[in-house]
Length: 253
Ligand SMILES: NC(=O)c1ccc[n+]([C@@H]2O[C@H](COP(=O)([O-])OP(=O)(O)OC[C@H]3O[C@@H](n4cnc5c(N)ncnc54)[C@H](O)[C@@H]3O)[C@@H](O)[C@H]2O)c1
Figure 1: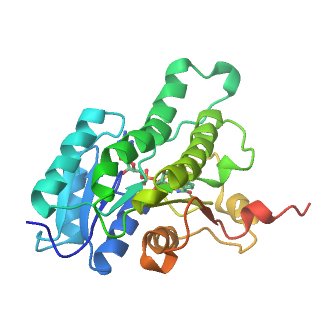
Figure 2: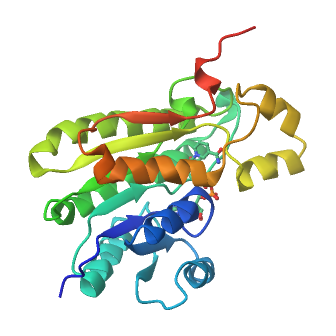
Figure 3: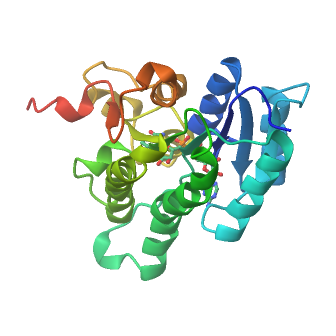
């Protein structure tokens, strides 16, 4: 039996922007599939999201594995009978000088961000096609459009996600599926905390790069992701919405 409420699958959603996005969809009546790498993290996210447990499902899915994604989507269909929205959010991070970056460093980033988004979109497609309002929102980054040293594989992956967004938007438009992306700027998260803890940046340095003079909140990224998936954005497809407090339009020196 198919659930009345629409269903969203968010990759990498036990933490961070993915979890904030899960909360946003849940608050708006969606049934939510939390997927991530660790059973323990998934269980703790589910407990926080849905104390009753009847409007959510936890899936151990490594987005580099086609098999994992297929098994996860099959579990969603078995529980809810439908899949309406896919959010490609899973991400890892490894900065490093390009001249010393190994093939394996490169692959570890591109396989999660870019290949993961491709595989999940492909596997979700037959189900999104059946939805009255199928949508994909992928999480890019401002580094898809500006140069930030030491992030070659990450930047290329994010630029690839935006290209994939445009291509699929056109290819799957006749199936009624809208495909968009959100490009966050510097957002309060474990990453920036970790970089600060390791002395690689400071809050002052980060904030100085942002015209609105503060880091973005995870809930602000979640709101943009939700908007693009919702009927409020029913004539928007193939676009990337930059949510960065003005960072990428600031060329003052
Ligand atoms: N935080 C920022 O400032 C910022 C800026 C631009 C873009 N982004 C993007 O936002 C997204 C979320 O990042 P975040 O800041 O919330 O980080 P985060 O580390 O808190 O969340 C990323 C999640 O992805 C999961 N993940 C990693 N590899 C995975 C894999 N192979 N399969 C499934 N899940 C996997 C992690 O376990 C984690 O739960 C990422 O795509 C990131 O590139 C973040």
